[in-house]
Amino acid sequence: MSTQIISDRDLSDDLIINQLKKGDQKMLILLQKRNLSTIRAYVTRNQGDQSDAEDLLQESLIIVWEKVRNTDFQLTAKLDTYIFAISKNLWLKTLRKMGRMVSHSFEEDHYSHLADNTPDYSDDNATIVSDFMNKIGETCKQLLTLFYYEKMDMEKIAAQLNFANAQTAKAKKYQCKKKLEELVKAQYSAQDLLQ
Amino acid sequence: MEETNTYRDEQIENYLLGNMSQVDRESFERQINNDDNLAKEVEINREIINIIASTKRQDLRTYLKTSASESKNINSSWWAKNKYLSLAASVLVLLGLSVIIYSIRGITPTIEMVSNDKPIDTLENKPKVYNPQDNEKEKQENLAINRKKDSNRNIEEIDKTNKNDQYVAIENANGLDTQMVVNKKMTTTSAPIITENEFVIDEISSLNSGNKLGSQKPAQKLKVTFKPGNNPAYVYTGADLILTGIRETEVEKFVNGINNDLFLITNDKKLYNLQKTQSQQMLLPITKQMIRSKFGL
Image (cartoon, chains in turn orange, brown):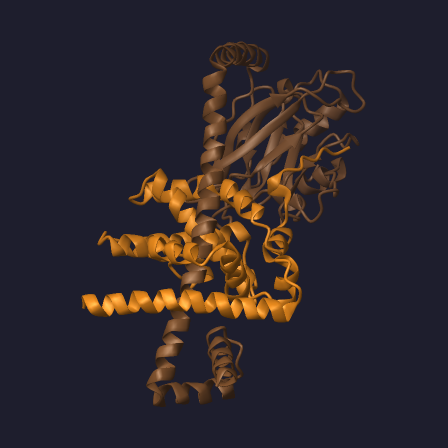
């Protein structure tokens, strides 16, 4: 006789990664729930508070999302361990940015290499960016995101956004990109004028 | 002219999205170095791609934040809306706990680290170790435990299957073929390596269900969760394990053995070794013969 309890924790790392590759954002929620207590414990022990921990975990999960989806991702440890390593690296960067002292022992451990070259997107200028994207309209936003961020091919994009075919989607993408380009150029010109 | 521009746009895109071969990339980089207009176009395209990526990241942040706050709201609003229910539940829980504490008395989730030189030393100090009135079977069980004088001999060595994540409870000592169980994966959320004696018992609670095989006794499940041991950096949030077939009143104590083994000792001196095994379904009975040969009985 055996008793088995199925819960989020029983989902294997492989399954979660496959779902992430397919674009299943719900997996991020699952990972967020699953890792919050660990990250919170870590951050609050190391000069941060609960809110810092939540932000940190969200940034880490975004990195995981991009790593899993955009590269030849090979997991060499448990997924939660990997998330913790990324969080730790990001937190070290944050502390350094804030000019806080970071002890030697705090920096080094045997699994920090798992998250070498952790990018830091927390400095994205969200206001300007979302302003640009709102100006080009929802369809353009979706189309450009699918092509440039998700790296989806034009046939799939056409199917997903209900374009007649890949050529139509490609022409639309060209228009959308031009719109965005004009906005960026205008921003550059404004900056040049100010400088 | 438009075709030329389109071609150039595609080249820039392929360059920035990493879709160029090494040779084409190097050739294109040479063009960029020699053509200021092209360099500017590349920069603008790079900026566009960054903007698109930043927007997506912002969407993901919003998605995660919304989910986190919804989760908080659900928890807090439930308690707010059900103040009286919460109060009643709390009273019931307290009552329940009193009953459980009263009924189990002997169960104390002791946090006990056992060193390598004295692996299960605590077994030797039990007051009711050997009773001549006991039947033959019990005598042998007690002898098996009590005659373990040599520190080189330890229960953990009986079965070295502690490689993976699944835990199995193994009935030991009396050799009966009763069920034991198993359960969930132990998930280490932070530390990839579990060193000796890192975990201790955190919580024991009872759940009502299950029947003990071969017994008329009402059975209860015993839920055991783990928390970090000496090193607070290690947190095992998913490490719970449920035993069925053992009534909580039967449990005398838990002992941490070496190499992360966990032992459960029942009041009637049965020893359960909770080990990591290869397979969830794998039951590894430790028989009297094994005990005998191990302890020279």
